[in-house]
Image (cartoon, rainbow, N blue to C red; front, top):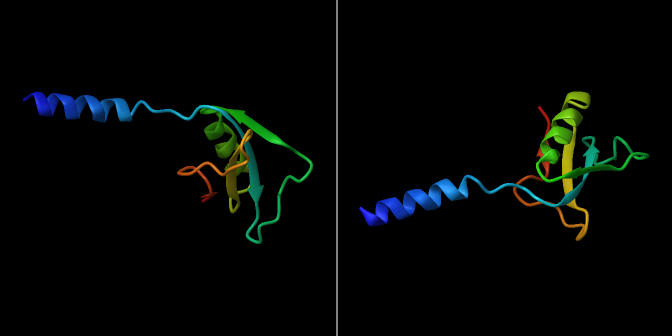
Length: 84
């Protein structure tokens, strides 16, 4: 019983993990060309989802790449994302 409660607690806590930090988002076309070359799109934490959804609404066939603003590394698990 204790093992089940422990595993359930871990499962619930893992669902609470959120994205935090500062990020730069880039929208690219099928050829990898930046669709907004004169704009620097920034988001903090879970704000990346709002920016990503807005970009996908504007550019339905785009690929969205998300980079950590401080390390310039792509955010694993969230990037790249292909708009539908």
